[in-house]
Image (cartoon, rainbow, N blue to C red; front, top):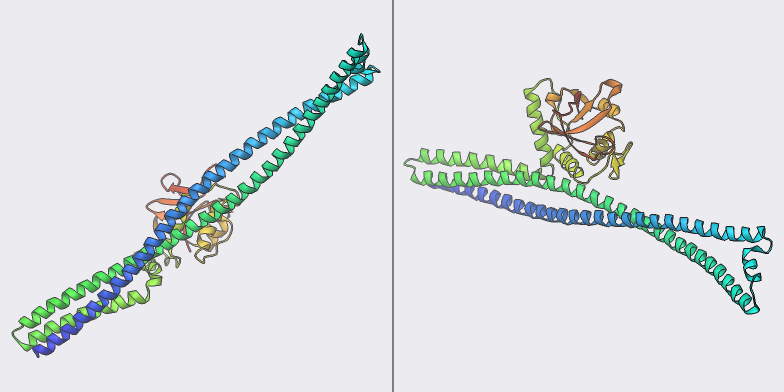
Length: 381
């Protein structure tokens, strides 16, 4: 019977080694994917920075060109007025001051010389005016080209910002997946160690019953870990959401008044919201894109990326949620200011008394604190 016990333990040890190998391999693959995403994030952040510098230069050149155009307009207006005054003087003085200047010559030679002088002055004035108009047209074309380039750069910057936000979500999901795989690996290592220890106990057993007992204990421990690890592998794609739901369910069980946690992956929501705080996105009334957000436009944009459709206003979003006290808010819940139809602001709760929101004019998407500006209530989707 002792041999049977050793054989049973050997089988369990082999199973533990197999689970450990699968867990280790999966964790390594996930780590590789995570490293690749981190590298893409670093590369994208560099491009975002370069894009912002490029846009700043284009806007600076556009402003300089506008100033040059304004100066030319003044010069052209002044030159045109001067020529008009000269023409008006010629009409008022019959022969005109220029013709009079020629007529008052003391000799034919002097008259010819004065005529050449007058013609030169007129031609110079006209040429200067023509040159200034040509320069103005060139500057106008340059300004148009700069505006086109700036708009193109803004669109590229917007796409890069979106890519960075999407990568932040991928990074969060992969980190959650790796944490699950690391847990499975740790359990498999524990099972392997238990099987090895059981093998020693079986070998040292003085009776058949002791050997069978040690073998059965090893089998139960290894089977438990194997089942847990298989479940983890089969559900790895949904691990982050499962963890969030389980944590929220546990909290809900301890606080009977609190509703069930949101089915939205809060860790991914918070990762995207956090990435938006680093993009210097301005507050824009009615804004719902990376070019600018208002409070409800921000929450609608973030949750929309995870399949949760929110209404367009803060009051309407409040109506879509289950109202809970602020003290029971969990990361990923919404916070609201105002009551009933008078709800006027909404933010995403991140935990620890902090939230992310689009505050008001002249500010960017950023973090806020409940202690600094307390919401009226929280809402769970």
